[in-house]
Image: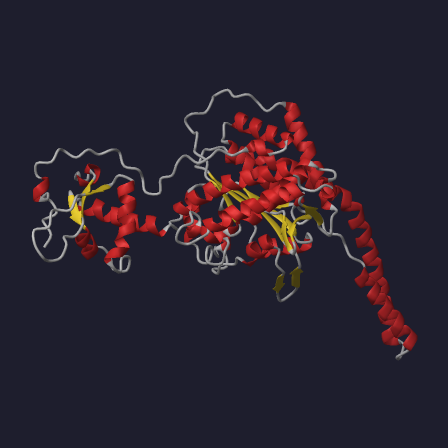
Length: 506
């Protein structure tokens, strides 16, 4: 038998007092990197920095929503031709998590406002065409009705039948243009699908709240509906059959830009199908540190010229790209292609299940290189607003996209940790909860295995990763094994517990 949990091994009774340092939280990581807004073209970087200063918010918030704004302008209108048959559309999904009171809404409004202005301008431009088409359709319908009436009273006259058929076909040839929409908010998947189909497969869902996830999970229908957001990211054929209409989008390009509260990160991991079907692996996450309580009271406002330049450039990008029906094909320069190939060589080993740091989020990391290609396309179009499709994506642009990619990788690791997706961390939390509940000063591995749920730890060896992690974080310390005094089974390894876990609960 092992010695009682609260009695030291005999050879340790005269040992010096044990020293403990403050333990680290489970899942603790080094401070997450700040958003590299310098990777943007100057007009966008200047606005992001000035907006962050005026609103006293991290650059991450404005930077991520600005990327969603560029994606709204260009999504579905360009693709990045990587190599061979591999191409990536330039629409992205971004999610920034910040606590209440972080001024998400003012930042959102400032960034999205030029998109709404451009949308209104597009609507004003097409109004005369809509009016003309409606009148032409009405005239054609009346003519078709008259021709049909003549044919039905003409006792089978072939010429009257032909005229009626021709008039009916004329009605079908008249198409009333759809009023342009760039942005939707908290639409249901069904409504968003209809909008996407009407807009030629291009739409952005931008919101300073996370209600869209509850809607996707089945808030109204009771059944999760993820197809639009899965296919809208990948560009896969989307067909919806309904009683009154059939909707088909050959190459959907949906943009998602959200600013949510941190608990949304945990909640979406619990939603049925969100990870298993791949939705969570399509999102670029940002978890900036809150600066609430440390904000300047009277910060510098955004200079008028910076706002005017941002507004003019974003509106121009919308208007320049909006007319593209077949997407522009963006190619990589030799320098950009070599940089991207080197990144892919670096990424692949990181996906290995046993040794790669991204193995436990391979569903996200397997799309990482594609995300970098999409970011490179967006940065390229934002840099060359008027003629980006005539130029190859150059090396510096690809390097900037790779820097953004590393930022999102680090934040994705933190986001998936918050979702509880690292099995070693989840196991460590289970052991930590047991120690918190029982508060032993010492315990053996055998005692822990006997007490802990067998559904979590099927064999003693399953405990090792959890105990190793708790020891690395400073919650427990493995004690030296006592000297062997005879034959028999080796004593079970024994651990001392940090005093913070031994003290009675208050």
